[in-house]
Image 1 (cartoon, helix red, strand yellow):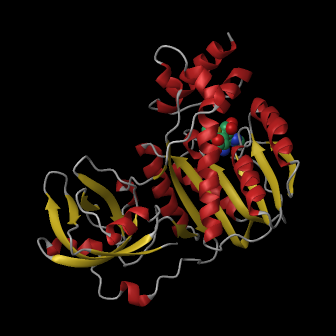
Image 2: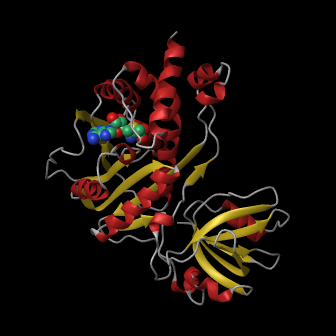
Image 3: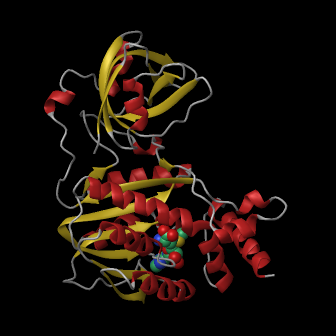
Length: 379
Ligand SMILES: C[S@@+](CC[C@H](N)C(=O)[O-])C[C@H]1O[C@@H](n2cnc3c(N)ncnc32)[C@H](O)[C@@H]1O
């Protein structure tokens, strides 16, 4: 009976998320169990991945003080505690805001227990509406996180969302990071890119995954780009819930997400001039149709190809048509391998690729061949 009620709540939650006007309610215990069973495991893994990658770039301070907006059952805190347990240095202090009482109860149960054998201090989670919460200065945070929350502010206009986010950004320390994460679904993903652009106009800087390597005008409303991780193993509870007819509806092991990391001060990854010099801006590729070129760009998708070709979205921030790198599956060499192994957002230089115009889609394809050379610069 319990499993059946959880299944029922999962279906209701999914219907709300996919609705024309996305909505969610987390008012009953079963809504929370459904979230923990179906949504939370992948979300914990994705945030853990984001933070581990940031640590690799040296951008994380040893001691981290976090404010998590719309914490739910403590998904971001759980991912951070997991990371701190592995990192074995520094301290982590967590503040969280959440409006649902039921989620707060789950948070209070889960987060302090998981943190108990780690260098993590969990301050009390506050019940608050992030839209109207009066910020309490002079607090200063080295990280502010907001994962899967903006999609739920469907009553707010874009400019209201910007206002809310800028209010919180004033709490960031000078070297602080503002991490926004949204579902990979087209609507939420492109909306995050548009918000990111507006936040830049309002004074923040984008650290990643977008990189402006050549000047031009990027068009975020046309940009659908998300990170993807290998499928996770289902949890025991997910397996139990899926053990029915049409059980695939309760199996959520795909991990795809859109994120944006913003800073108060300019903290771009350093790309040597020599890496960019002589490369053709992607927005100019229409003048090189049929030619071989050298370009630099960020790898903005994992493989979205078919049986014959691997296909990857590439972007240098200069705007223009969408550009894809097309690699025949029959092509195996160290250069191609280094490209495949590059992470989402990594910067790559690709030489000796032929430019083709994809008339049907209005995109530009860069066709890799045996003489194509790739060098990847991990962020
Ligand atoms: C999809 S859940 C995301 C939870 C968690 N951040 C995660 O990544 O799994 C959205 C959360 O935002 C909270 N939320 C939505 N609107 C809110 C608001 N105006 N103020 C505070 N919390 C809000 C919801 O209650 C819910 O916990």
